Length: 99
Image 1 (cartoon, rainbow, N blue to C red):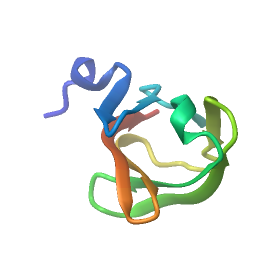
Image 2: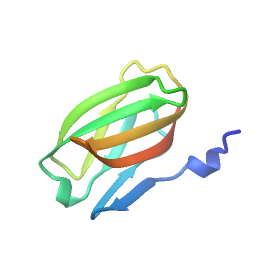
Image 3: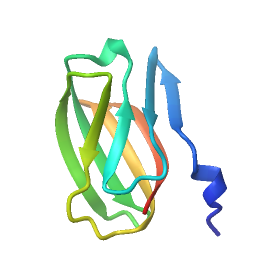
């Protein structure tokens, strides 16, 4: 069973001096906070349903420390996995709830 209180928070990972934060739960936008060290870096953002279906694939230039990614016309609701990478390097993998 899913315990919303376990994922109703800010997901964060600190590895290689990266501190990426993802607001959780999400509605029609994913709010992201990036460290200064990732400014002017090309990032790939993927969102997957818990059954493995890819719901979103976006590439963006990290030009601000706080950014949002629109989830236009996404009807899926439930547990998701977000991956944020820079080329072949995975910077963040975290669970979140899409409302």
